[in-house]
Image (cartoon, rainbow, N blue to C red; front, side, top):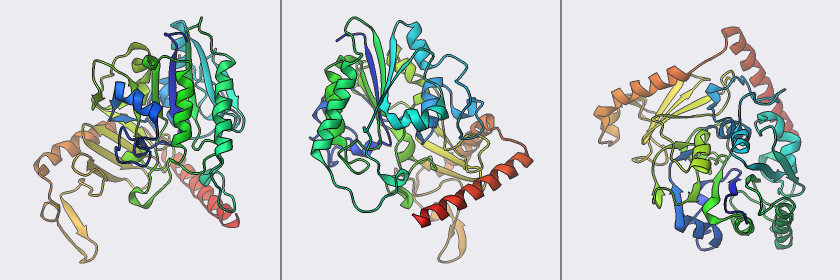
Length: 396
């Protein structure tokens, strides 16, 4: 192996709850020896946020190094040209690295054009039959079952792909994106054993000091009665795993970090400094856009569709149950409004007016929108698309 080669490994729709380094009593505790060893001798980042809770928007953020609101993309659609600036891959190439992307073939066929931010000289390796087709993306009849033989074949296929281009005489940067569910397993979060075997394969080619393990986004995982992703900016969807080599002699880092700054960690081993982070569920012209402003322990959320606001203290209220945006609360059973501080114990009510104003101001600074006419058009288009999707699902 070349000790300078770097691996950035992301797992699609991977929640922190799946990993024992974040949730010691999770099902997979003791069953992921490769990841657990890397976490034990590396740095675990507790507050690492995706710029968007959906795959292609997340890639675009990571590799252009820009938040969605800083980009020119208006809506989620196939793009007709590559990102015009230097991507993370271009910067890596200039630093002397040969760049490679390893992913399931479906990403090259269906997803590539939604981000187009993979650099001018990057080689794509699209693995056929790497992804188990499950979930809302692949509606099917019947119940699938785990298949250990297929899982072993999946791991072997990954090893063969790496053997085809890894060269100990070259500095190589690899971004590998592991699919929602690896072939041989059948549920989100149910393929962690196979995922860990894949991590073991990568350790054959990369030094542990140059392996970074993360995700593109998480999923709602049952929070607020939802199981999917892409439409919400709550903690399970946007606060994602990041395990890297030991940095600044810290076993744990609690600083808020965005994936738009991942280049600094990968190549400079420095922890980026930002006071405010942002995560968007959609691009700025889309009517169902939700924007999160992240500051310390607070999460402010603005919902474009109905102009509603939410505010949570995730240290006090990890499940984001109580909205702190107002000093009054409506009792839906008694049909009366009452002072929130009389119903809900929170020791920092006096600080909230200033915090609300500050976070609203930060949202206003980055907020941009299209004209009222365009908004009407996009809202109508969104309604038609939603109605069509519901009708199609009913037929299936």
